[in-house]
Length: 300
Image 1 (tube, one colour):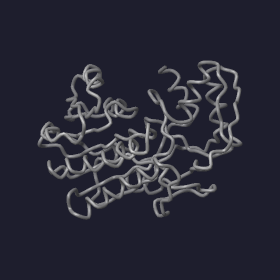
Image 2 (image 1 turned 90 degrees about the vertical axis):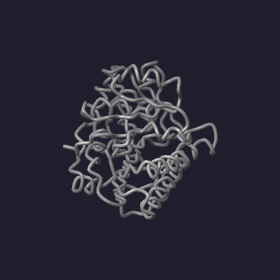
Image 3 (image 1 turned 60 degrees about the vertical axis):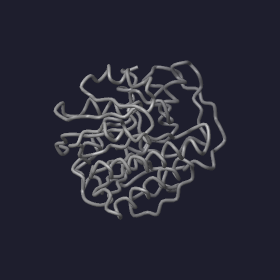
């Protein structure tokens, strides 16, 4: 069970994870949801009538005033894997995090839960990643998330916030997902197109179903003091090729593969040691990959 939370501010309201989290929160929790695009805010307000939806750039001076005085925690989900330019990716991840931290300082909100990524590390070569290993990102997204983490550490050091939980998640997928290998494979197979796989397809991953992602967020609400970084991964190792085979099986489609050259900027293996999250948060992932794919497909 996660800690009881009375009031929370969530960024990234129009993204993939936010709707799942909103459905999982206790109805007594006061939720303020930020949706950057005003056109999408009406849809979220309609879908979640008990949620207070605000919109506009996080730099707006009036935005902080719309967050309730009793807000205890920010769940910072906003960020972008890709963008039209380097500047856009940095803005979505680094500048946005800086602005969130400024709002927290201004409104005296003590606790932050930050959605980071396993991409802050590089190729594990089959060795399990752990929080004690030095980050070494190979992609712009990984660099941007690591830069955001360092802004958070600086905010803690200056006493502007008191607690931060940083979740370095590995290949999150599930209903509503639109990025990553699982979403790509599902979309292409449903259109009877060959899936695209880089290299030999034997790259190892531990896909994380969104229900397990939401569970670890809820368990993070207790907010230990200081900077708390966790490796967060799914319950089983699956190769990229096996991911495609499983999705084809679940969809009942014939699998055809369009082989692509190995991307030198992409980590070959990403498998993680989740013992710290198990020990300190009481969290373990429960959704196996085939079961997670069945839930994904059932929701389409």
